[in-house]
Length: 428
Image (cartoon, rainbow, N blue to C red; front, top):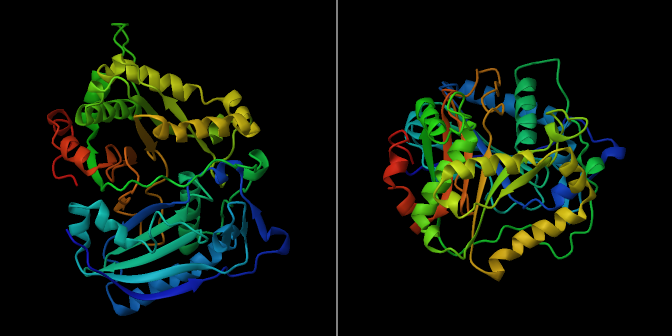
């Protein structure tokens, strides 16, 4: 469906109290520096809350005031990013857009089109410059709400995103006991010169399509069973949900793009991994910043067709992201050299990279602004190709896979019979 979105107003919201002078310069970490300048987007949907003009104004004011209060705990989000080195925490504030969406909320949730959801955000998601944060308050004809939030990936990863949104929601509903963020990333991963490496995502001239595929709990269990290690017949080892779905989607991608017929192509599957739990001592979930790395799996020729092997390779590569690995990343140079090598591979020859990001079991559905928790949380269309983002479904037991592929590849992937046998109907 085509969303018609009309911007009603746009204001700049500043922190409710000024940032202390000692906190005015926020240093980016090494991991922040090498992270692409894009926005992490999610839109949270709530049913029929703005049933009168007075309630719309009340909710809008509630959001604005609570954002202003929340920004006093997240000073960098109200500042401006400078030279990929630091944030000037100058309290300039963040844009807050109010928009009218001329359709029913139920229509969007029933049949979401990722590219259309991009209209519910205040920014082009691949044009993250100085502004760290933007919010769009969308009101549907049924008086339902969609809160579109995008935070610059330069400042924080997905868990940082939820740390902000859920604390903002807690302030809005009047919570007094707040868990404040810890800004420790630059002290743990000191900034360094990244001369010779450009963190910008290389844009392709080809059209990229994002589609959403839903896997129910029962189908996920079927896939897990399909890829279980049956070397022990008494107690077969089953892969995790994400290991199984990653292997399954990769296998269908391989078929769609005919990678098997190009044996000289270098293939790699990347999984983003949260480093907080893999440090010594572990960091709290509310530690703010880019505290992630990626596990690299180079599928063997056998695993291009045999996903049992790929599942074990994925598991092994993720297991290697341990305390010793984190120490090497903290040193910086070896990790920088490695990502430079990965970035240069497409220039040197034919490659097929595929990235997997899981937000499953993250606090995706916890943002209660005083109106209850969201009935659905959606992502957006991406401009980067060959990737999948996994989100928990609203039911809590299924998984949504938001897949980005070149248009010609998606046309083949989307009609793959084995894929269609496992996904729920009516996905976009």
